[in-house]
Length: 525
Image (cartoon, rainbow, N blue to C red; front, side, top):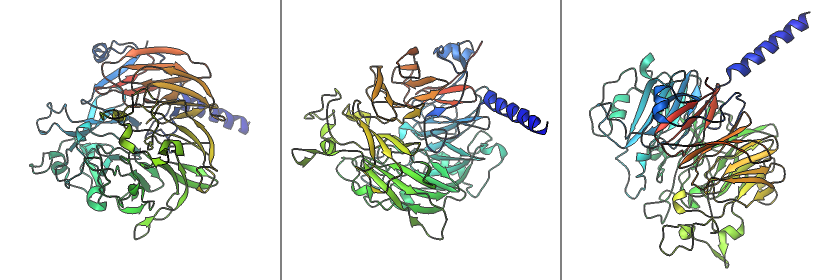
C-alpha cells in the first residue's frame, strides 16, 4: 500500500510537470545547447498579423510586444519573466534617453507581455583608435542567461553585466550603484532611476580589463557551470580587416558569477589566427565523468577545455583537452597556397564568389557546439554579408584527447552552405539550417541526408525542435515543419519583419523574436 501511494504521488508530480512545462532560462535551454524542447501541445501555425495580435484576436497568438529596429539575440524565459535583447532605436517613448544607438534588454511579464523593466546600454564612445566596433546600433545580440535571481548578459558595448531579474522594483542592490550614470551614456547627467529600470549587480569590461578589441558586434551568450561564468570576448580584426589588433587577448574568459572577478582565460592564442571575429557561445556537459566546456574558435577550430573547479586567488589558464580543425585542407589551400579569408567576400569587385554556394574557402565557427551522447555537432560559417559559400558540418567524438582533427572525426556533411546556426539533435536525427535557407535533416549516426527543405531566403537562426515540430524563420517567413525522416511542411507565415533569431519554447508557448516584435504563440481557442 505504501509503494502504491508513492507511485501515485510520483505519477501526479510527473503529470503536473508535463502539464505546466518548463522554463527556457538560457541559450539552448540547457548547457549542452541542444535546440530541443520537451514542451507539448504547441501550435503548428499562427496568424502573423501584428495588428490582430496587438488587439488579441490573432489565432494562436497569446501576445505580441514591440522591440526596437533589430533583434539578433534569442529570448529566454524564467520565473514568470521573458527577457530579450534588442536595440535602442525605439526609445522616443522614454525622454530620459536621448540616444538612438545602443541596446536594450527588455523584461516582459510571461502571462500577458507587460513590460516590467528595461536595461539601456548606450553606445560606447571612448574606444581606442582603429577598433571596428561601429555596429552597436544592432543592440544586444546575445541571449540572456538566468540563474536564480541573477541574469547575465553580454551587452552591445562589449561588457559583461550581472543584473537583478526583478530590476529596480526591489531596490538598487549592490555593489554596483551607478546605473543612472551607466544608462545615461558617457558625458551626460545620470538619469533618475525608476522601478522599470534595470539593476546592475556587477560589471566586467573585457575591453578595459583585458585589452580586447571586439569587431562589429559583441555576440556571446554566457554559460554558467557551477559558480563560474564562461564568456566569449568577440575579439576581432581592425577596421580595414587587415589584422587582429589584440592578437594575444583571450577569446574565452571565466568570471566568478557572484562577483564578476576574473578567474581564468584560454591560453590558445586564438587571436593570432582569427580571420574575422570571435563570436561563438560556449557549451558544456559531462564526458567520461568530467565536465568539459566546448568553444568554437574564430580560427575555425573547435576546442574542449576542462571546466574550472576552483576559484583561485589569481587568474589561471584553462586546460585544453582537445582541438578539432573544422576546415580540411581543401578549404584552407588552393594550388599549395593559403586561401585569403576575404577572397570569398562577394562584395569585393574582384571576388570569385558568385554567391551561389559553390565558393570554397576557409570559415570560422560562429555556431554553438552541441553536445549529444558524447558527440559534438557543429558547423563552420561566415558573416552572411560575405555571401554564400561551401559549408561543412561535423560530428566529433568528444571522448578523444589532443589534436583530434583526424581521430575524432565521426562524419562530415558537405551538402550545405556556410552556417551560423546551432543544431537540434534528437531521435537519431540532426536538423540544421544554412545561410541559403535550407533546413537539412541528417542521420545522426552516419551523416547521410534524409532530406533538405529550401526556403530560398537568407537564414541566420537555427531550428527549434519541440512537440514533433521544427520551428525556424528567415528574412521573410516563419516555418513550421514536422520532425522526422520525411519532409513535411505544416505551415509558413509571412512575417512583418525578418527573423534572425532562433525560436524557443517554454511553458506551452513558442517565442519568436523578429526585428520588430516578440511573438508569444500558443494554442488558443
